Amino acid sequence: MQKPKNEVKLQLDSRSVNEGYARVAVSAFAAVLDPTVEEINDIRTAVSEAVTNCIVHAYRNGMGKIYIRVRLFDGGKIEVQIRDRGCGIADVQKAREPLFTTLGGDRSGLGFSVMESFCDRVRVRSELGKGTTVTLIKTVKGRDASREP
Amino acid sequence: MQKPKNEVKLQLDSRSVNEGYARVAVSAFAAVLDPTVEEINDIRTAVSEAVTNCIVHAYRNGMGKIYIRVRLFDGGKIEVQIRDRGCGIADVQKAREPLFTTLGGDRSGLGFSVMESFCDRVRVRSELGKGTTVTLIKTVKGRDASREP
Amino acid sequence: MQVHIETEDAAAVCYLDGELDHHNAPSVREKIDEYAVGSTPKHIILDFGGVTFMDSSGIGLVMGRYKLLSAANCTLSVRNLSPHAYKVMRLAGLDALVTLQKRGEKGGKQYAKAEK
Amino acid sequence: MQVHIETEDAAAVCYLDGELDHHNAPSVREKIDEYAVGSTPKHIILDFGGVTFMDSSGIGLVMGRYKLLSAANCTLSVRNLSPHAYKVMRLAGLDALVTLQKRGEKGGKQYAKAEK
Ligand SMILES: Nc1ncnc2c1ncn2[C@@H]1O[C@H](COP(=O)(O)OP(=O)(O)O)[C@@H](O)[C@H]1O
Ligand SMILES: Nc1ncnc2c1ncn2[C@@H]1O[C@H](COP(=O)(O)OP(=O)(O)O)[C@@H](O)[C@H]1O
View 1 (tube, rainbow over the protein chains, first blue to last red):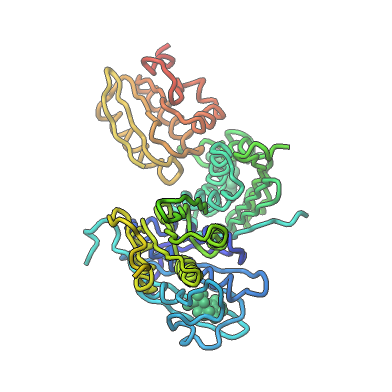
View 2: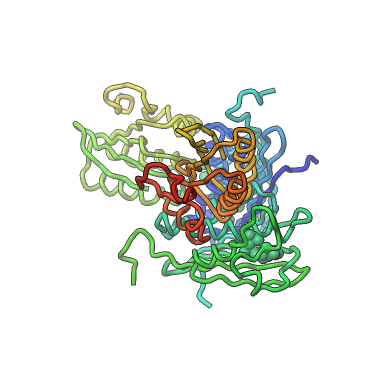
């Protein structure tokens, strides 16, 4: 395992007002990698999906804590882990299918699809009744094109 | 004890690059209280002093973790706790005196004075060899003057 | 997130301002739906010119309005999308249902497709 | 944090840009001291017009430059301070040592006080 060059851990209540804060807190930490506007929007969006899922799904019956860990690696790699101690997901593979949602209303069932399409890799580990950990991995090239391989 | 209406916990490495991040992370969380530019600058400055102290004093011989907890209360009250597990302060009262510093160079010995003058209250608890906890308390009136008592 | 609604020719234009996420979407939805029910316009245009962030909650918002308004014989289109918001909506295949116009993109009336 | 140095009449003006904290202060200090040693100007003006944040590291920076430059018979002044940076410097009593000029404040040469 590579050693991160910097790391922050955050712990938030599952209030919807914290969705915006989580985006700011993650993207401000990643700013040192000098991402492009598009890259920073991709990260903010994927984080927003994962944090929203903690609020609307994991802790749908009450309030809980959301744990976020951001790690920066050499070469522009960023890893964001979003963890909850909520209800867990019965069938992760099914949950990741586009349009699958266990909530009606205006949930589109596209949260995981957005994460997948905006990140290089999305890892989901979940245990029913225990909680869910979503890990988003993305390597940003940055605004300094000379960093490209 | 009043119950906070929102709370975030952060854990950072004692790298100086994280001073700026700590300021952003705290002030972005307090933004919901709609502070004035002056109030937000006061908070950012006090946080910057306390976090810098963890880096230059508490962990002067190496790297350590900085723990920050921000709590928002009704009425515009914000409480920021900055904690380290570093060397501790032998004589807190003396440390808080203006111009007192155990470091030469460009340290002014005015860190605590800045915190005190920019916050309503500053609490310092410290134990030698165990670490230091600085608690900054400030009530912001906010840009909406109607909130004034 | 702010919404204000203006009429433009036969259409009602809803100007959205701010970050469109799960936290903010409900108030936007209510404003639009309330207007649609009260004023029964023939066309509704969602103007995303002021939207600074959007996640899949934006998809849900547009999809939900599309269903509701179709049922009421009102057409829907979306304009002034940032490259990012456009990317998110395309990912959802919303371009097959609703006319999506990016920022800086010309194109007269924006409710053409839904009228077909 | 960026620093660039220009000459203005008999003075060297150091334009500071960005956030002045413990992390950024060392590079600013080095640039100024290097210039002072190499070019031995008679007056140095620190222009804080681009400074978006300052904590007590700014006090240390100004105080340190004041001592160093005084010893070299070079006067120091600080201009274009934000209300916030001014507040921090006043708290340290720097106004007794160095001419401090706020943003938008007029006042010809800024190295008057130190020349007294
Ligand atoms: N953190 C979580 N805890 C519990 N269930 C989750 C979590 N995240 C996702 N899910 C489940 O996976 C489904 C699909 O999620 P997603 O693709 O984000 O779509 P949506 O959020 O619109 O339902 C959700 O409907 C929910 O059942
Ligand atoms: N977190 C801390 N851990 C250990 N010592 C500290 C801490 N914070 C402050 N101190 C001590 O208190 C003194 C005064 O601090 P301060 O007023 O901030 O001035 P300065 O940081 O410029 O020295 C420091 O020089 C140091 O000895």
